[in-house]
Length: 413
Image (tube, rainbow, N blue to C red):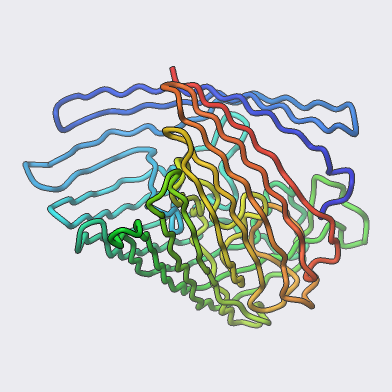
């Protein structure tokens, strides 16, 4: 996919996390967490070695549970907001969150806005600047191991919009300014099938509506002069009304045999639009604070839409199949296959890790094979090895294989 100069890139990350938890009373607690990170990047084709060190604020909050003896709780501060499949959201946010738990019912209502940078090296991302959000989740455990969930998210993008002709730093590019609302429902659960093991299922359905401003950038100035790698010029602004839909349905069947072999099939689809910038855009997009991390019958989460391509579900259909095994006492190996197709053949993909644009002539984006291995056989040590190969389809003019290997070691003191 990328030219040869990008091959053989290696990144090594070392991280140290310090956490402090203090229970003020039986129903009140304070939590503080900070992360120190050291990153080395180098390429086997040159001699450059780039090293950085940063300190990041992690979760810092205070929690009040069972307020006045009720089922309500309140959490204030920089906190992780997540849901089971991370299909809607999973992000640390400066926010205020109200909980309610009573029997089979769970409810969360949260509002907030990021007010600080990510770390000593990374300021607040342009995608998160001046974006207040209100989020809601209601869950009903209607039967044993089975739930219905309702989701809602509303965001207002108050970030500054550039004007055509403005020259900005490339790192400050903010292509999408969205005043959007998302709403949807999920059914998720596990069903025993007598002597044939168990089946876990999920079905997510979502709608997205609102208004967007899409900014096109170019690398040259108004006089045609190359701006270099650090700057970009605002070319055009597109203002659209948005209405789209998305879904993700699937199941995995765990057989009652040794190693617990697990078979998975799923299909996800986000609506598209052949002419997305003509004033109305029917392309679905996720909330922007999703991670799309989950696990089937393995011991750890992984990227459910591909470890390497890792696209946002937008103008795309994704077929997934997988075979997993539980090995030893607390370890797992999974082979995962993905097939990607655009709903409408256009020359852009909203978000993905490869940062390659399709040609707009074919809908075939390609396929990916992932190997995900996790080992948790020790009290303090966790090992993870992930390999991925992406084979681009005819939607890309560059057809070279892309591949990645990720090795992670966690030692908990």
